[in-house]
Length: 456
Ligand code: TYD
Ligand code: MG
Image (cartoon, rainbow, N blue to C red; front, top):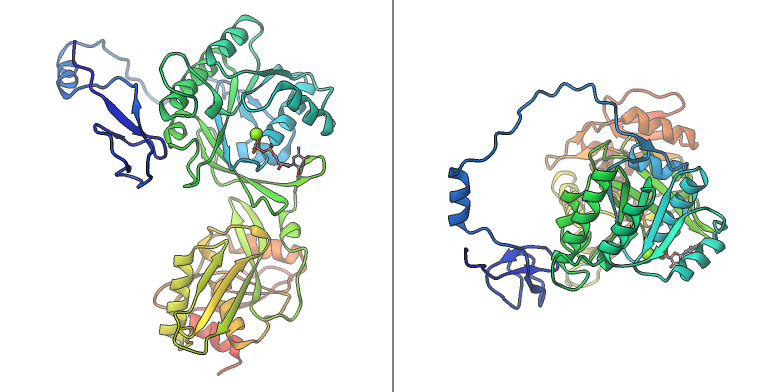
């Protein structure tokens, strides 16, 4: 038998190394390397296997008459939207998010709804006692839903139990980090345990046609379940995001083998659980101050869905030569540095002696590059202390050359803004006219700056 080599897996990023070290060479975390029980294939074995005779496998075409997999809409429209229409039978879904963001609440509401609609649903909590979950259900007014509830952490016990009776349509495991597989050694929550427990549960899903939902806590670097190991094992990865200090939550599809990954579901955490928010723009634009410089509304696009958010900029002149601060909330700080550089180099505006603060209102996070023009407009307005018109929106991508580039789905953005009462738009040239919107098209950032400062 080949000598079993020891190996060590980083609990933060999942990278494997043959030697123990105090610091992970890949992610730089300290004290995260733990001996991993996985079997190691040595180069010798690998070569040997390649040469000896394996079984022939079938190679076939792409054509199929197989029916589409069964979808189970939960009846919570925002959740179904993020899932691409509902949970898919026999699939595995991972829902990640910071502790306390509302994963258990959302899944309790979804399971209750499905159970009330006649589906067989099991909810296994490894984090809370059954009574705790029941109390929460009662408080949410879901106490009567016929959900099969258990508090357990042994994967073998769970699968034995579920394998005996009628197999559930949906199984929720809350959370995968608390589950323990006795196939391998190690404490729950370690990379190898999480991987093994998830592997067993996913196999159960595929064999029995149950839709399995795994809850995963996100670590501080933002990856689900510490290592990214789970993301490639499951069919769908959803991320539940939001600031705990703000009400709203966004459910975002990161990976979906059965649908698109650009849809989001929006919820608000209220007194009795998560409420669906079918008009997110109204939520993010509730409190708008009129006639304040440095603020403009940006029509962000989430998949096919526009979300209007307010971008706020503040500049503070520094008296002496101290290094000025740049602070960003809700946007990319590298991108802000770039916009500042373009404003300086191409438009002659100097921010070098000013502190710059940029904030996306409501705790929303923008990843859409079309925000460039809105950010630039907010910065110019803040620096010049000239308020932007409160009925205006702005969008467009800015190149390093100072050129304003067109962006995807201009008309969709304009339509949403018009719906909410906005009347004019600062946009790249060539965007199609939309009823009720006055368009100002800009080919270069310099032209926008001149327009805002009333020059030329
Ligand atoms: P929870 O679903 O337990 O979060 P997770 O499973 O992601 O760790 O959500 C807990 C938070 O939500 C908790 O801080 C309280 C808040 N909450 C409400 O504000 N209203 C409610 O009706 C419920 C059930 C929770
Ligand atoms: Mg929870």
